[in-house]
Image (cartoon, rainbow, N blue to C red; front, side, top):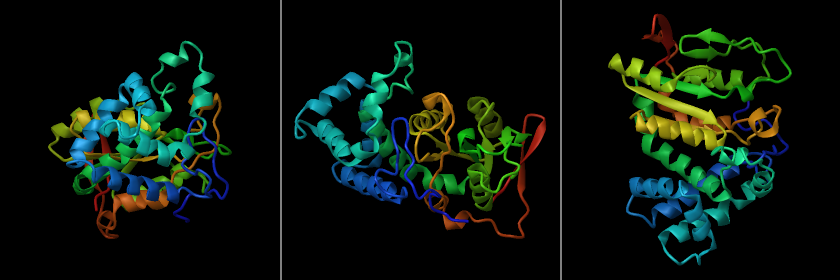
Length: 296
């Protein structure tokens, strides 16, 4: 199985595409890593930069002013301009998308995400991964929540509820959820297709058992940020990988095939989490049902 993005043709997203003008998304991860290093050199540390990114990303009017201010106006303006210079080719469709929103859709924070917010979210995901990756890898229970838009649209999905939510049954070899699920299981992570689970309720139940819990999310950038922040507020070590583009029905009105960079996902999981072949899966309980969690 190829660990890179499977497409040789860039995917077009409603607002963003991590492909840019490349034939895979590896270049995006190299770019966001370098930009994070650059920005960290200008701050006292990672927590400080993450706090700044989250604060200004919530204030769209302030962001517009920073984007129009000279790049040397202050630290925040410099950050916004730096991100725009590096990430604008990936978010070329945001302006046309925002112009096409209905009055009611403009109140939807996800759909109305501005271009400056996309850029800050890209940096935030990178910073959160750096902050939490070691804690996540050491957690006794590691769960992943996958978007159903990664499924094989040409096949009838046979996923079924098991434990916290739906799980992939491996019914299609060409299904990206199947490929991601297999990779996660090899690294001791229990993958779920996020359909019905209440994460807040799940966190409370699992944390009562006294086991350390970590979460990995895969979603389009605005949705991934929402999940990351919710986990952070709950004190759960969270990491995430964005979808290569946003192509689901929420954005387009219909579903289009989508991908995620499996090579970068495996790099985030780390070699030390790879399951030892002879070790049986550990178990934890969710409600009245028993759920299997694979540990390294």
